[in-house]
Length: 133
Image 1 (cartoon, rainbow, N blue to C red):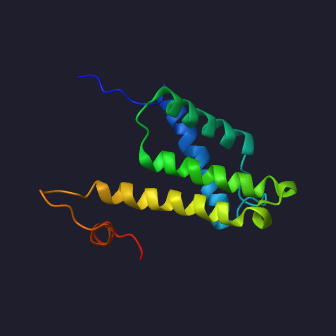
Image 2 (image 1 turned 90 degrees about the vertical axis):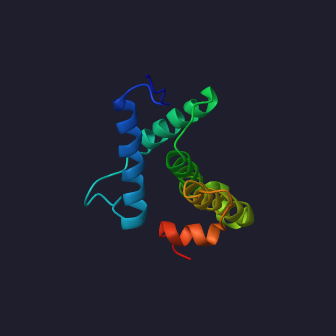
Image 3 (image 1 turned 180 degrees about the vertical axis):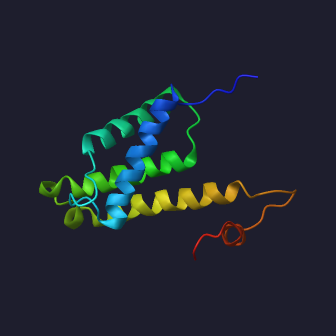
């Protein structure tokens, strides 16, 4: 049985994984100062473009990849466009965008845990999944 996946090759998948992980490490660990490694923003943008292409094709994208791509897009918009002053002008829009992505992430994690004839609340499923409150 052939399984259809969104990526063209394992190299494409690894490219996206590597660049998303490097970006998260740089944001969380603050390691984009040249001491450990430097994030290549162009590679991150290329990875985002590949995920966007999958989306345009109507491919089933793993929710973790899609949500990561959306959060990284928002972070890049904030960090790389200081002349647009996103933090002051559109703080409400940015908060709404980020909260929407986080809610989608929680819901997609919890949806996988739904079982049986009756749906359980997201709060109960989130605890089962080990998500923080």
